[in-house]
Image 1 (cartoon, rainbow, N blue to C red):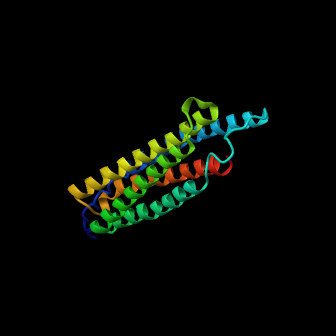
Image 2: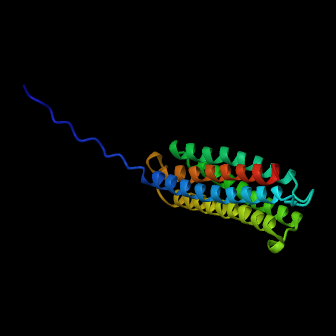
Image 3: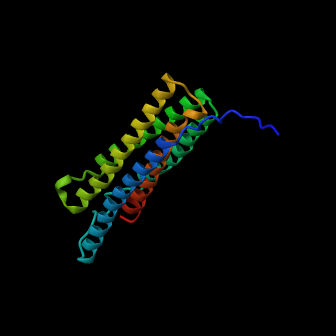
Length: 194
């Protein structure tokens, strides 16, 4: 009896980019959740002693809700980019990444409006300081997510593009989804429950 030697299967590329991004994303989320926990604790301490946390009517709900809806739409577009990368559809991938970046810029612009509308001073007390600490940390996370998406876009534009190289887009998409989850915390804790 004779056996036929089959050629070795092509080695699959390890998903180290995605795994590394997920680990980093988890670390960033835990740090942000700790900051939100400090905010909630300090607000609870202030309310327990009868202090007012924010002046009545100083933090509006409308702009925060628009930012939430914009970020929900950006989750759809970033997932569109991931699917386009898997399907080796470069034009739709660029459109999806570009629209996601524009949504991120729109949210930063809306935060600028919220900052000028509230007119809080950083040295105005614990509430104002923690308001800027939490929202500023979110903006820094959003900017880093936008930078990750921009690098992914440039990488896709300049280099090969395809199913085997979609891991960078998947990693950026996972980080972006975490940013949206963090904004949900901001939206609920700061703008809804005030």
